[in-house]
Structure formats: structure tokens, C-alpha cells
Length: 441
Ligand SMILES: Cc1cc2nc3c(=O)[nH]c(=O)nc-3n(C[C@H](O)[C@H](O)[C@H](O)COP(=O)(O)OP(=O)(O)OC[C@H]3O[C@@H](n4cnc5c(N)ncnc54)[C@H](O)[C@@H]3O)c2cc1C
Image 1: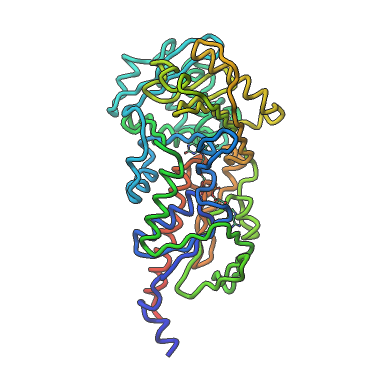
Image 2: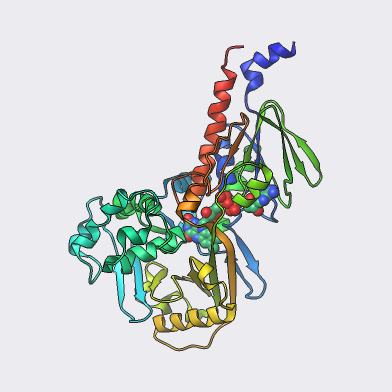
């Protein structure tokens, strides 16, 4: 009787997937499965979902903050699909076109990168960045043919375009200094954005916060489709038998994984490696520091000047800051690839970045209350060594898939990469299961 049931495709239908980690990768896997009619149970170690992409109330400043300023681009297709599915696409805001204002912290020179909407890059002819030459832009093609292991600096370094756009783009998108960052990963970013024209480069920022855009609507979407989220629930072990995951160890006891169930491991690399010994994961990480300044109404967005007004943020070159974001009541500075500042005390970093903001605004102001948030392992380093250690989603266990921005997405550590990895993991389980359930008995 049991054998007959096992052969019945209905009996074998995937009934639930257990997901370890409710960051962007885990949520994206759950949303993809929900779209296919399969509910998920998420186990999240932290007090709330979102992982590295979350908002929280900061008692010291008395405001709600994002753990780090996050920028999406309209050409982040997986992220846009995810947001549309969970009904949150409208929670992102932006200038409505591709516009990136920059300032040189040393010389005070200002320029705006504004690719036109179409695919043909007329802006390179008629609206290029001051001081750059047409040949600088044509050199971008070298990225496509970069040899494995070549760095961004080796392939592109030297030109004015490099200094004014490509270097800051590489540092922020790859969170790795260009002398270490892989050219192939920057190519993936350029191919998905600049080369598709301005319509794929429109900057998008959560109107309210990361959680309000990317996390809370996903949880509501999942709950309406049988999804369950357990926060403050750390998975301490995964039990495997005969190439199947059969159980998870949780603080309150074990969870059995049924024959018709599956598991997605969507934790950061160092946790994934502990839970699944033998898994190869990146080992080098880069920090990001965010400085949040509590400012009064007088310091808000309009005071940054028309220059930053339209975009809501300014890129800074030649300084400590990389980006300054203006939000109601808060100015937030992002310092990327921040391992190099590990020994710089928070107070000094806050003071120096504030001086840069004062210069940007053309007015000296006393240092306001601030919060410095350093995410020490914000992203894996986008280096050749990391790239060689990125794992695929399928690791040879039938009812199991791995997700996370660090898996082999071909993208750097980004929301887009994490969401794409969740889609891949869910699709792999669905395909695997369909294949198994139609296998001849
Ligand atoms: C400061 C900062 C700025 C950034 N800026 C940008 C940006 O501008 N644009 C962009 O695209 N990307 C940006 N990123 C990168 C982006 O946030 C990440 O790539 C993405 O959030 C990673 O998602 P993930 O699901 O792969 O991993 P995570 O977010 O790390 O999620 C993993 C989850 O697993 C949970 N977990 C861990 N161990 C266990 C366990 N044993 N049991 C259960 N749960 C567990 C964790 O608590 C976490 O919630 C930034 C990151 C940081 C830190």
C-alpha cells in the first residue's frame, strides 16, 4: 500500500518547503514557491526577517534607520519582479530617470551622470562627464573580454572616466577596492545597467525603509499563502540520510522533514558552511560603514542644494564618504570597502564625513548626533579567491537547495544577486521534484 502511494504523483507533490534564513534570498525563495502554490516555513535566527537588508528603530537618534543605505536600479530585473509580486513596487522612490550627481571632495568639482533613457548612448556624445573622452567610454568594452582573475583597475584604470564614474561604481557595486575587485563582476553590473540604457539605470530607494519595501510586504504575501515565519529561531543542525534532508534541529526540538517536503539553506556563507560541512563558500569579506546624522528640518534634503535634490543622494569621490543620502531628518553616509578603515575610530570617521557634508553644502555646521553602523561582513570580497569558492544551488541532495548572495549568481553581493539566488533555489527544487515525481517506478 505504502509503495503504491509513493508512486502516486499527487502523493509526491511538494507540500511545504522549510527555509533556513529569512534574508532576501530566503524570502525570494519563499515568494517563488508561493507563486507555484507551495507554502514555506521560514526559520530566522534574528529577531526580525530581512538579514542584511532591514530597518530598525535607533533609540539613540530616536528615528527608524536602515542598517545600511541600499540602492536598487530599475534594471534589477529579479528585484523588480519580486517587488511587483509582493505588491511593493510602488514603495520605491527615485528621480524617475537615470541621474547620478557627484562631487569631488578635494576640488569641489561637481558633475552629473545622466544616461538618456534609450539603448543608444547619445549622452556619451552630447552630455558626457566633463573632462572625459569618447575613447574612455569605448574602453568599457575591455571589461567584456577581461581574462579570469583580472581586476577592475588592471582592465580600466587610469582615465578620467575611471576616476569620475567607474571607480566609484566599482567600489559601491562590488564593495571591493578596484585593485582587488574582479573585472568580470563589474562587467555583469555594467551589462545589466549602463549597456541597457538609462531606463535600466534609474536609481530606486525605499520611500520609507528597507523593511517596509522588501521585507514586510513579502511576509504578508507569504502569510496569505500558508507561509509561516519563526523569528528568533536558530537552526543548529541539518540531518541528512541517504541523500535526503530528514530533519532540522531548532531550539525547541527537532523538525522532521517529510518525504514530500524540501529545505532551502539561505544563510550567510560562514553559517552555511557550519550547517553543511564540506560546502565550499567565500572566505574573504568586506565591511561597509554607515554614518547616520540626526539633522533638523534645516539640514534636510533641499539644503543639500538643487544639485542633490532630484536624486536624493550624492556620490562623493576623493573623500572618505562614497554616497550621501538625504532622508527626512537624517543624512546618511555610506563608506564602502571599509576594511581599510577598520582602525579608524567611529568618532573620527563621523567627524571627517561630516566635514565632507559641510563642504558639499558650503556651510560649516557643528557635528550633530550620529550613529555609526559597521557591518563587518557586509559582503563577500568581490575577488578572484571568493569567486572560485561560490557554490551552485544544487549540491547533490535531492530535496535541498542552497541560496544566498554568495552562491554562484554571476553577480556581486547585492539584493539582486540574493533575490536571483532564491529564485534559482526554488526553481531547482520545483524542477527536481517534478523530475522525481514523474520517474518510472
Ligand atoms: C550596509 C550594507 C549596504 C548594502 N548596500 C547594498 C546596496 O546598496 N545595493 C544592493 O543591492 N545590496 C547592498 N547590500 C548587500 C545586500 O544587503 C545583501 O547582498 C543581501 O541583503 C544578502 O541577502 P542574503 O539573503 O543572501 O543574506 P542575509 O541578508 O545575510 O540573510 C541571511 C539570513 O540568515 C539568518 N541566519 C543566519 N544563521 C541562521 C541560522 N542558523 N538559522 C536561521 N537563520 C539564520 C540571518 O539572521 C539572516 O537573516 C548591502 C549590504 C550591507 C550590509
